Image 1 (cartoon, rainbow, N blue to C red):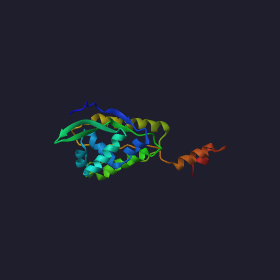
Image 2: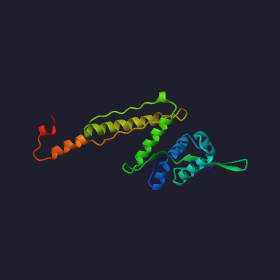
Image 3: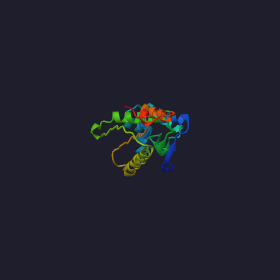
Image 4: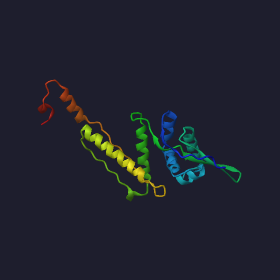
Length: 195
């Protein structure tokens, strides 16, 4: 029996603690990765990830309860009902930073990168800069456009490629000192400029 299969939504917004916990697991993150390639059964997921069928079943059930995956097709095979699960959305949007959700995303992406056998197909680069507010905002637009360009170039028939972007303002004690010096009454450029 084939159920009515609708295309996944564009974005699933994680809103509850249950949903955040579901996506917070590296194993479930990898289950979602498998399902991004198309619907699969518990057994197929287990085989692709090299995990026990019981473990695959547990993780899929947690994701289904949270609304992140759902059954899209059932088939009778030798008296057993096979359920095909699919992702609920093409992308998952985590709550705003500050609640630890970004940490999960970065940790999972790094774990996937470390586990990848394709060391020769990896680019990792960290660059430090000092930018004005307007320059920071301009780069943010460019970085977002790069991610969109990658999404547009995606071809389901080709091997997977992930892009993790983190463009942020780090803790900056020097900037805080400069701002405090500028706020002091009677401060001059020579006082805040250093030696």
